[in-house]
Every structure is written in structure tokens, then in C-alpha cells.
Image 1 (tube, rainbow, N blue to C red):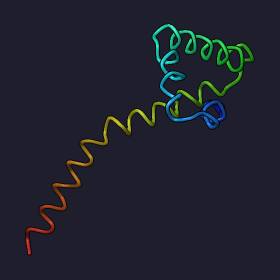
Image 2: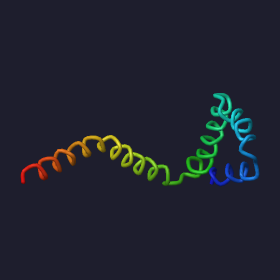
Image 3: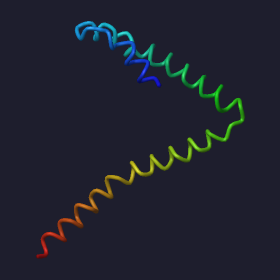
Length: 89
């Protein structure tokens, strides 16, 4: 949703105007303000309504995090397996 809004903002702009448009949005103050607004919206939408969705968000986020943490080890294991499978013939 945010990407669509961002795209709609910049789709009519010329490329040379894009850096001037993006620079104010990449300041720490703007990022902090935007993050605070997003957290406030999340709290209003899910926490204050006693929804169970935050529990799902935590579970799904935990699964994604554990996958990303284990990925390098799995890749090393797969490379090791392929190396020994191909070199034995």
C-alpha cells in the first residue's frame, strides 16, 4: 500500500527532479516521524481492538527470522553436500 502511494507520488516526475523529492524523506527526523505514525496506526488497528492478529504477526515474524538466521548454515551444508556428491565419481 505504501509502495503504491510512493509510486503515485513519483510517476509523473522527471528523473532529474527525483533526488530533490527523495532527499527530505531520507532524513532521520522524517524517518522517525513516519515510523512513529506507523506504530500508532498499528496500535490503533490491532492492539486497541483486542485483535489476535498481533499474535499471528509475531509467529510469522519469528518463523521468517529463524529461517533467515538458519539460511547461511543451510547453504553451507548444501554446498558441502553437492561438493561431495559431484567429486566422488
